[in-house]
Length: 174
Image 1: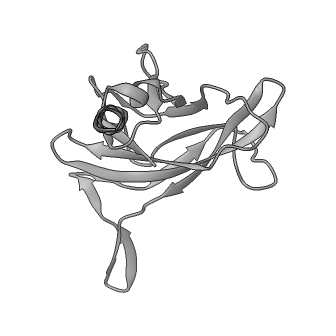
Image 2 (image 1 turned 45 degrees about the horizontal axis):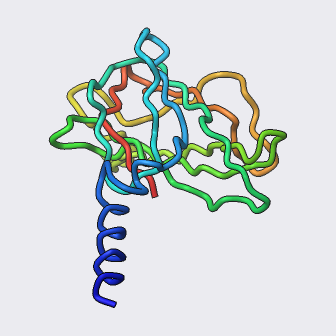
């Protein structure tokens, strides 16, 4: 009995440890590609906790695309991806992206809905964006001509800051 409990505790500890057990087998939810760079896309893995990019890149345009399809008869649960800008030591929430799965011939494929977290303040009776860095406001602009499905989800999303390049330093999945 003690051996069974010890094995179960070890399995749970490995499953929730970053980089170990079931967390290492987590699916790739999406790929984030800086369009102004030749760098390979960042793979957003469905692990718990904040994941920091090993080499943050600045780009004026980013493209979020689907990655792995999920097999099964029932729709997988919706997921939430939070993107962070700023620095690795002090990340700032940039936006939340809701991921919902839709059926395809290959299985369930993720679609995305971008929900910006605008940082605004009221100055002299007008709303103005708060700068997340000197001269860089936190206003996201969705780019590209892709249309959403009936529920407002896109198969891919292109976006960038309205005032210049954007550096994505990390992400969190829920």
